Amino acid sequence: MSTLLTVISVNDGKIKRSSLEVLSRCNELASNNGMKSAALVIDSKASEIAEQLKNYGPDEIYTIENPIFKNHLNTPVLKALSTAVSQINPKVVAFPSTESSKDVLGALAANQQTAALSDMSEFDLTDNGVKGKRPVMASKIISSVEASGSPVIISVRSGSYDVVEKESNANIEAIDFNFSDEELQITLKEIISSSSDRVDLSEAEVVVAAGRGVKDEEGRNLISELASVLNAGIGASRALTEAGDYDPSLQIGQTGKVVSPQLYIGVAISGAIQHVAGMANSKVIVAINKDPDAPIFDIADYGLVGDLYKILPPFIEELKKIKQN
Amino acid sequence: MKFYVCIKQVPDVNAPLQIKDGQLIQDADRNILNAYDASAVEEALVLAEKHSGEVEVVLAGPEKAKETLRKALAMGADKGTHIVTNGDEDFDSYAYAKILSKFFSDKEYDFISCGKQSQDTDAGLTGSMLAEMLNLPYATNAVGLEFSDGKMTVKRQGDSGQEMIEVPAPGLVTCSNDMNDPRIPSLKGIMQSKRKPVDTIALNDLGAEISSDDVQTKVLGFEEKPEREPGKKYEGEPDEIARQVAQLLDSEENVI
Ligand SMILES: Cc1cc2nc3c(=O)[nH]c(=O)nc-3n(C[C@H](O)[C@H](O)[C@H](O)COP(=O)(O)OP(=O)(O)OC[C@H]3O[C@@H](n4cnc5c(N)ncnc54)[C@H](O)[C@@H]3O)c2cc1C
Image 1: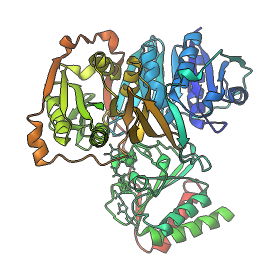
Image 2 (image 1 turned 60 degrees about the vertical axis):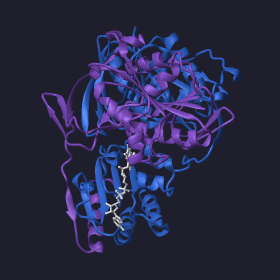
Image 3 (image 1 turned 45 degrees about the vertical axis):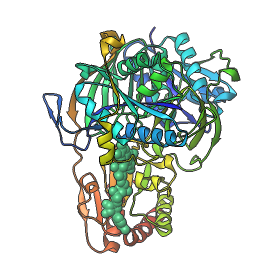
């Protein structure tokens, strides 16, 4: 029976929602096409993660556990992936589109001499591969794409599918894997900054994003306060990550993260296409900008025209009241 | 040190776009050097200046793409190679990686770098494909580069922080555009670029014929993204509009 394999992305011992979205879609496709849906966990604590996965309906769970996976390094991850792919021989290998998967997707395709489609917003099976859609030209346009190969390797944008919970009594199988330090082609010296203690942006239900107009401590405090009232993830435009005001991992856009929250609030962001590429799929968009002609207003459901320093304090106050009731 | 930078000509994503019968219609005169590649060129030039090295740019593309190669030379690259492809509209990342790997198979270098993705397709696959084909250690999504003792220290943007990765030479890095502002060629640079050496290689002479087996992904067509309807603009007293919208987010949208 053909297998659809979802590679699960884990952050600090927690399964990323985006990988459950991909798994849910693969479960659906597998059951519609008489195939098997399998999940693969490559992690230093893979077996613990595997247990949690039983709530999301895979037919089979594979683990590759090794201390080397505590931090992301492409050499061992690539070896683990190619070992798993050779053993499982899936028809499709599907990843959530994260920085870690972007790091290895192409190399895995070259290693397996097969096709890859990255950052898809929709995918389906064909007789000998995958077809679907992916945004191009800074997400201004949608292209229809198709790939044949065995397997076809894909990555899927966060927010493209809903997570469906489903009990399963999947068998958990550990894949043999050895890795010696001599094989390590690259070395990790240090992880400089980490935003892991904050709400994970690409997973957040509410996102508050700061743009160039947030220009001082007072502005950044207002952003934090707004985010904390809404239990939101904080993001930023490139203008601010480049200036060093916000951690680069918080950048939203073509270069940064793709977010798909229920509510996105863009504060003093102009709405350049490269930023919009990362947030246009938000369900409700609120924009606060003092320029009534800012392009962000063309896509905002609620456009507040005015100075953020005057609008945010009463906005926060009102939200607090609503939350209290 | 010897640096190769792979560059690509792409349509300007800021130019007006139109779709006709599922095909993308674009102003053919608005082709540019991929912004991520421009950052890779900039970074290579800075490192080469510091370590008295040499920067060579390589571009695979049709005849017309030569102007983009010239742009990189005008920025300051020492030499260029143009691998001339004909009718490569259908080439995918794998095909380009294969062409480039053929080119590099008999070259010596410390580092190859390229943009982390191209602005038009945003696929982001070619760099790591090329590294794997050449069996090179690599790092992607670099936001900072330092070179010393035959090693590149790459600051790369990971999922939850910046990772400092050491990549030994020969190796490959892909660059984000978040680490520099690529220099704009000076008039002098543009004049000089005309005298700089450019090798032109036909795809066939490279021995990298691309067959249909190498192009495993196909673009079937394009469609407009469903436009978001602009919503309502609230102008007036900050106090008033702020409260009003906060309430609507609760009562109408149910997202609070
Ligand atoms: C290849 C490439 C990739 C890129 N990738 C990304 C990306 O991933 N993410 C990204 O964000 N950008 C990206 N960019 C940059 C992008 O083009 C824009 O430059 C950037 O998004 C602008 O950020 P901004 O909206 O904060 O700043 P600006 O464009 O300067 O806008 C600031 C806005 O704030 C408003 N404002 C100022 N003060 C106030 C105030 N007191 N109250 C209210 N409003 C105020 C102004 O009216 C203005 O509209 C990329 C660019 C390139 C070329």
